[in-house]
Amino acid sequence: MSEKRFNHVLGVEATALTLAERYGVNLERASMAALSHDYAKERPDDEMIELIRTQGFDLSLIEYGNQIWHGILGAYLAKVELGIVDEEVLQAIRLHTTGAKEMSQLDKLIYVADFIEPGRQFPGVEEARVVAFRNLDEAVAFETKQTLSHLIAQEVKIYPKTIETYNQWVVKNRRELS
Image (tube, rainbow, N blue to C red):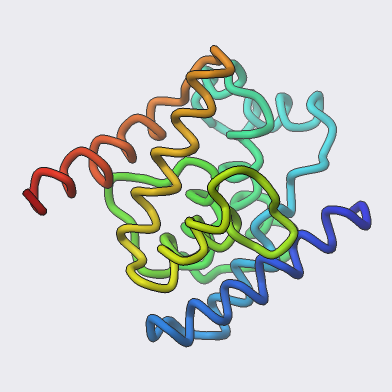
C-alpha cells in the first residue's frame, strides 16, 4: 500500500470511529471496515480482471474499472486473504464505492467516511462533513448526488448500483420529506 493510500485509510478510520460514536455503530466493526475498505485499491488491473473472470463475478463489472471493482473485489479478498468473516464488515467494504438501495448503519458510515476523511479536498467537502454529523441518511444522499454529478460531468459510464443508490437516497428521501 502506498503512503498516500495508507494515510487515506487512516483518515477514513479516524472519521469512521468518530461517526460510529455519534451514531451508535460498533467501533470494532467500523475500524475493521475502514482499515480494509481499500484493500484491493492498488492491485494491478490484470489481477482484478482475472479474479472477476475466475471467481464468478458479473463480467460486466470489468467495464467499470477499479473505481467500482476495488470495493466489490476488496470484500472478496478481505475474506480470502485477511480472514475477515464478519458479513457486516464485508458488506461495508463491498458497498463503499457505490452505496446501495439497502444499507446498514455501518455501510452508510464507511461510504460517508471515505468521502469526507480529512485528506479529501474538493468543492463541497466541508458541507459534506457538516451534513455527515447532522444526519447520516442525509449525508448518504448528499454524497451520492455529488458523486453522480461528478460522473455525469466526466461523461463516464455509471455503474447501475450507483443509480440505484441515487434513486433510493436522493429521490425517494426527497419525496418523503416533501
